[in-house]
Length: 354
Image (cartoon, rainbow, N blue to C red; front, side, top):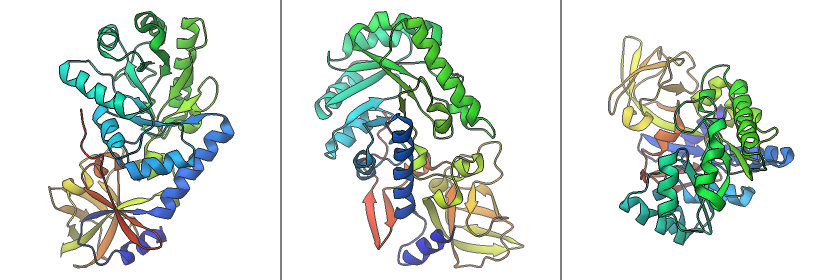
């Protein structure tokens, strides 16, 4: 991961901690997945909750993505207000009270095509009462994550509730986020979508699957669309799971060693830079590039405690690959893109949780 030493060297004039992205690695990630989807005959609708940036969303659309996936309506609003109108799918089911109806009106005014998520009778009825007639809906099918979504056998019944605004079925293979789980999760996504379509008894339109680890395994029949997000940057989880190579990793937190004692050191990046996201199959709160035996075993708000860091001294800069890049990006106002030079782009969709 020599490219991250180049990132450190190029950003010496910036106070730590900060979020930096190797622009060439990110561009390769965008291009590679788009090519893989094109070759597989599957549409790509990337989830922008990972990068929270209208500028990067434009890069993905320019590369060939058919539209974007947003986590929330306010994300879609910020994207449109930044001048990036797109075919938008909002992936979180919404129960429409008066404030949410007002948000939906703004989304529909900013984007040419808007599709929402339905996963049960109450949400479906709320959608029918509240959504403008040109707003469509996908029905989320639970393929094994057991978060939101309905069973494949019940999904067809929701089509009757939403009528001609039905656009297709969607799954999220989030249970792929465990060692050895990606292939089975991708198969679960394909099977769940096939069962939902069979229960419907007619072509369902879009059959959409989503998860970076499961994407290569979910791109076969009957799937027509993929919605991964993390692939754009990669992170430590993806590297450990085998979903990306070390050279594919694009985003790091650059931090400074501020204390050394007894074979341990402290860096100036804590929970407010790295988040406290650590899967139970990971030891560290991030990968310290070039110090593969180092373990970030404890975080306070602004301190990261690192075991096994004997080669590091006070004042040294390190690059830390976060475990889960999505919540980390949402902690920063800007990202430093490092390429031919260094430029800052605003994380202009930051927050936007409703």
